[in-house]
Length: 172
Image (tube, rainbow, N blue to C red):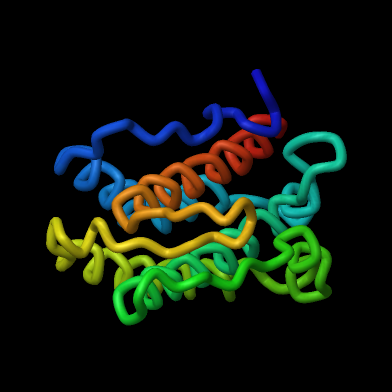
């Protein structure tokens, strides 16, 4: 198994269907509970365990999901309220090295992920087919990403890091 990409890398279908969107939204909706199910019995030792050599600890992964999905939600709002905005990228590796990401109780991020995902899913379910085609520009590579594709990216992202957390659980 590839420890860095245990579920593989995201591959966007050429044609994104309503079923893709519905399944991806369900993944986003269920992620907070699925994370909680995996990490609810984690000890401090487990929280400080990495999912691969030179990888992040479970604690860092959980706080990263919060940071990333918070940024993702904002990107959706920008795309809906601006004409093809260039989004602000961030150095996720540097954020993962900040003291709060390395030491804060995971409940802080789990609570925010739960609330954020509830609001995000409500928002996503209200998007029209036309709105799903709105785009933003990611500055890394100057790539236009539609909201439809980005739903898939964030569904994958959550599942990707959930697999990392599961791999840590499986070590114990």
